[in-house]
Figure 1 (cartoon, rainbow, N blue to C red):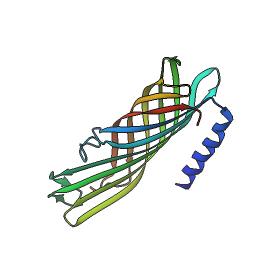
Figure 2 (cartoon, rainbow, N blue to C red):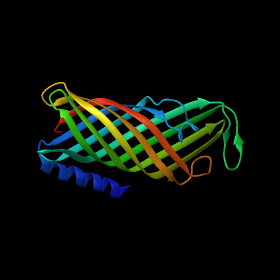
Figure 3 (cartoon, helix red, strand yellow):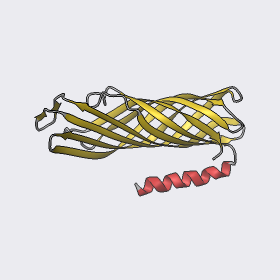
Figure 4 (tube, rainbow, N blue to C red):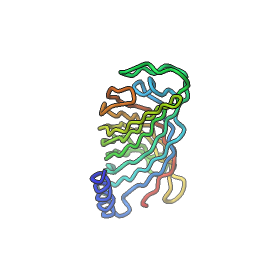
Length: 202
């Protein structure tokens, strides 16, 4: 964890060398479980936030490198049986996932910056996932680090001199790692819609 924080701080410091050729985005996230996640939680998540810092590699090239941080919370109350490698658990259950993506990103921008600026790109890095399960007086919690990635497409629409409406869609995929509350290693995936504001500079 310390190494990741140091790497992020180095990227932020290096980004200052690009002057105003940078974009900062703050956004609210809605996420829909994918096929790997929906067998544990199948409810849409309305609780998510994200931050993106992007720096253009040069003033005349529409390519950015940057970082992306986020927090997405999934929860579901259900009576469905949960099958683990030791037993089948029945009864009213609370199921929870907290996903924290920490990614290095690259994007390509195209279109008219003054009207609608489109972008496509990807993030690669790690997902810190906390999974919790409650039934009756029994509770189990597992936390795992996953290598993962996401493709992304989106757009920015100017609202004022330095401000833009920021809208994007991502498909997050965290590869299998460690153990889940069911005992076996687990992959996680979810579709994410981001809506917020992007600023030219900090």
